[in-house]
Image (tube, one colour):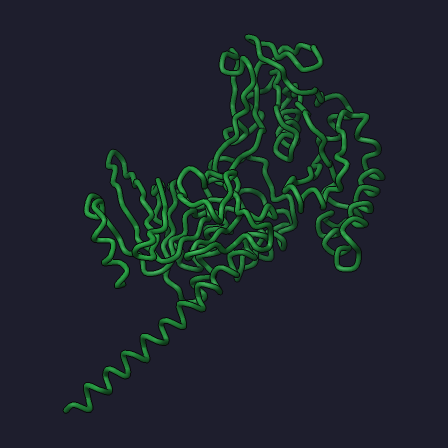
Length: 423
């Protein structure tokens, strides 16, 4: 607390409401932030969670399509200390996952401060504390608050902001243009010619959904992509790979998985889907690029219901000109171009995080920085990676917290004894 009073010397200290947080501040109330909060609760460490939206897991609640399910079996997606309900299916739906997260927050008594948009966070060398400036909004009321804390946990994740491609003529396109984060269902595109830009898991699944709602999707495939069956031999491909990695080297597991994919799908390059030269697991580990798990889109591509096209050169009114010179009549464009971290926009720090908003140290060393700074949910290994980081962070902070709490109790007891001896 003595460090706190050193902040009074700063000229802007009294220019806004200032709140001392007795414990870490967690920025973000998505699965990563919730997991960290739950683990801190188990360690007996108080905390505060700041969330810019008005709900937990806003990405899942507000920026995902209706048909979304977890792509991996639930045992690989559960957060620490509380498994999914037994009656949930192997691949829970979007609604079920949100229900799980809400029950998780209730179980661990996690009550985020909603509508708190962090503007900046920086470490104060003089006091040895973090200064987190936030703008909170309630209706028409706008308040600036500065939080002071010893530990800062960055849990805003890999998917904080939409990536909007810079394509010539896109801003002047006459038809509807939306990012995948605003796509809910193909129903509103029924009977329309839709260009889906992107061929990752979202691009593939949105193309399939458009097809199922009787739209005519064309999917832009600009680079190579691994497409794998979601299951092989009745078991999740991911689970099968994890099992094999216990005994076999990664390069060999990659070869086995690709052989199985060829056995199930045949040669997908004939469909316009060129495979990368690097295996799917190695690519995931080194570049963080996730393979596509097929849910039925390949069958639609093979039948011609989903058309695969190369990159877009430019848009012109209701037309898309491709890099191969072909021109497509298009009624709407869906940008399945992914997301990015927003950490560089608000965290004033350059040692731990790189300019792309990810920790500089690769997994599994990217969870802890200097001066009480932590990161969770940046492993590019999904929910299981976030859970692993959350446990480490809570244990690290918990150890310091318990040691200092124990010392304070000992000092208090010693002082009390001295007072008694004077009477």
